[in-house]
Image (tube, rainbow, N blue to C red):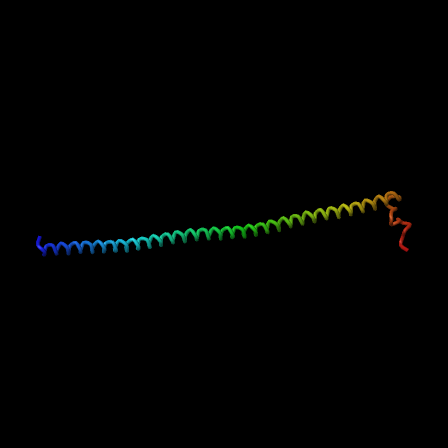
Length: 128
């Protein structure tokens, strides 16, 4: 082999090595870009999950508030009904007392000589 051919071959080998190194660098860069894209997608998914959780918590709080309001309204209605029942009972008791008084008066009147008797004293009482 002549020296000139030998030199050419060496040059080619050097070129090949250079090319390999270049390819490696290119591959690394590609890999980095790929990784970045992957990371971005991952981040987006993470964000979505976070958002969903946030939304759920918000919904729960909303539901709780709604429930509380509902409960308050229910309580008010219950209270009103209770009040009405109480009022009715009071009314009945009042009525019974009135009835008893009436009955007593009638009886007292009855024992002392019928309609003319009683506290009014009938005709004998008279206006003085």
